[in-house]
Length: 263
Image (cartoon, rainbow, N blue to C red; front, top):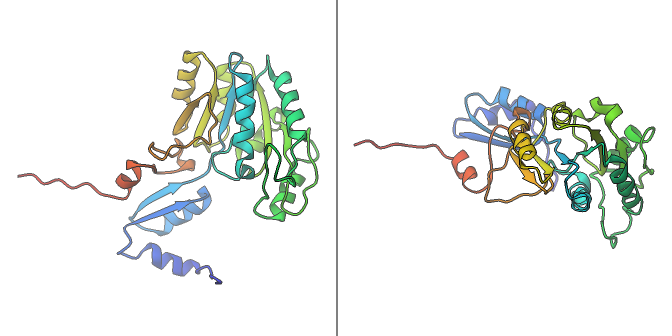
């Protein structure tokens, strides 16, 4: 079955059709803005981009952190909106964690489906080569892709902070060092996209500060940002990451309007 995309004029007719009372879209902020511009006075439900951080403070469980970094970045070959796209490690333990990540990532092969960390293909070979060409000149670890299969790429991001304001779909491990809570929060805020955030610490004051400061719909303690429960609200804290909530009762409420009968 071959489906042809409708023309912009046809889409506009659909958006403005009176029988359509709400429009739901999952994707990027640029397309969402086009939909918003053309749909008129309709309710819009947008689930948009995520450039989600995972943060390790000095007192955090380092072994668990590394396990979750691999789990939450390699899943779906890094092609999901809640992947752990930016990895922040306190400077006091940065070198040690970097070395361990380098050692583990070097052993992962995208061509081996039986490995401890199986890594599937990207959406296309073009996508794999675009990522390789973006990072190969300065990455700590980077191998040429084979068709759509791309091995993990490890990048130290502090010198390329502006590069990581957008989200990358692929097994890109961008690691950053920080020296204080204020420092890491300011680094995280350079990107307008965030759905969820993972914080590894045993200090509840730090956890509370991160929760209050981060523009994330969910902050997870000692867990990665890809964690999801359908029974809880899901969505970003920034307009660039969405305009609605989904999951459980939230979906029903977003798709309904409330009525009152007063006697």
